[in-house]
Image (cartoon, rainbow, N blue to C red; front, side):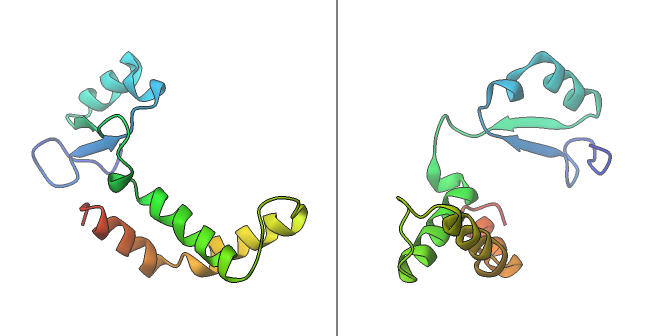
Length: 103
């Protein structure tokens, strides 16, 4: 919140998913006390969730390299870490946000 601006200025809207904690009075009061506007995503819309694109990219990477999810043990953890740190680049992340309409 320290980098946020009062609404309707730039950086004045906080977009949250529908996790229970995000609907608490404390969160609402904190955001409103800073003069910001709080908006929520629809209940579940994967097309607006950049993380869903990241999950899909990681799964495609693992599948491409023949890494199975069942019985993979610790090797799967390291393959997923590799996918997260090398396959999901900052440029790709920006693309996810653009694809979901946030940029």
